Length: 412
Ligand SMILES: Nc1nc2c(c(=O)[nH]1)N[C@H]1C(S)=C(S)[C@@H](COP(=O)(O)O)O[C@H]1N2
Ligand SMILES: [Mo]
Picture 1 (cartoon, rainbow, N blue to C red):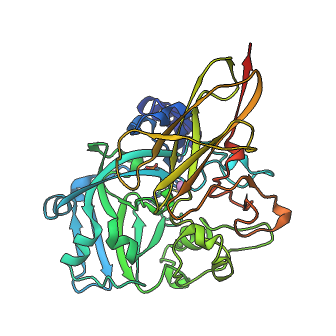
Picture 2 (cartoon, rainbow, N blue to C red):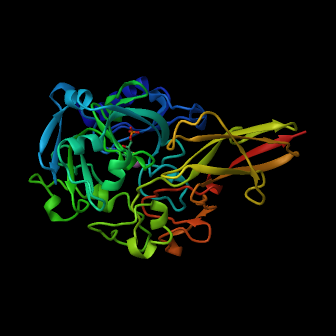
Picture 3 (cartoon, rainbow, N blue to C red):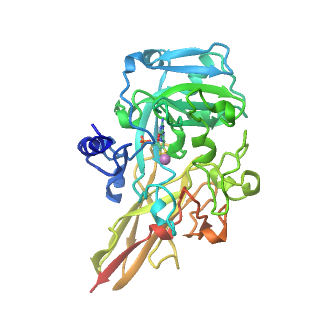
């Protein structure tokens, strides 16, 4: 079988199992939710939740799978799935997870990588074991300043390992080793049999198919993180998932940083970190109804949409019906599903005839607001400045509101 045959078969199989997704690349599986309307539901069904993978999806036998706990621990151990499920309390979290490449297609000129629209985001209930319970049981060091590196078990011998280092303070706060999604066993593409969930953080932190968690003094960095097959463990922490402006050849690597907020790295700590890491999500919102390019009669229109953020909750959502000239508050609707769940909003608009640009702007509890636009590469921004989100080589983190605006025509 050639890899082309595999690609076609895999695309059909993916579409069959995930009918709510548009496939960008089938091998490895990369697919986004097919329309903004899918995000109107309080929870994203598994069939509509985006999939982002760097290597071919592994076919894992859960009975033989173990997670090794290594590094700064009293007792290194290999945990089986049944130990993980039966020997620790079960916990759940609702997490609106966004891929840091979501909305990449709006960068101009194009950023590198698959041109994701708005669909690389989804909200699910993730269930599993809290990482802190496992660390406590085996006597792991959990002091602030340490890191936990989680390694994906799917990389073939000639590909770099998907590994992420998470600050210990976040790990012990609320990270999970999850084995269920929306109350059903996880599917292969979403990480079966077990994945890390880092609530409120960009999807790239939530390592799927976890085979090792290692307690460390630093993030993964340096030559010692190349294994005997030549596989690099540092690529996805230190090189990918960094904000790299056009003038930089490679992002500056760090052993450790003490500013974890992505937003702070893009603003007040921009000198210190230089190339922000994609850690917690940036506040963002989307108008879901009416649809882009629709024609509406002159009568009251109900605008509806969704907003989400990172470590802080969404506190305010404003609507503009004149392309950002003037703003009015929207109201929140729906149940409170926890600190990492999205917020739904509505707004009733009495339109005049003509063409209108509608946009939404969310603000979180820390007072962080979506910037208006995207910068150009020649501005060489490495952070958010003057209401502009920085153009960056790999097109990460776009939460600017004007690129996400919709246009409607109102007729008499
Ligand atoms: N092992 C492993 N974990 C991974 C990835 C990967 O390629 N390999 N992709 C990451 C990225 S970039 C994202 S956005 C999320 C996507 O999770 P999902 O496919 O369940 O939506 O998984 C993350 N975890
Ligand atoms: Mo991602």
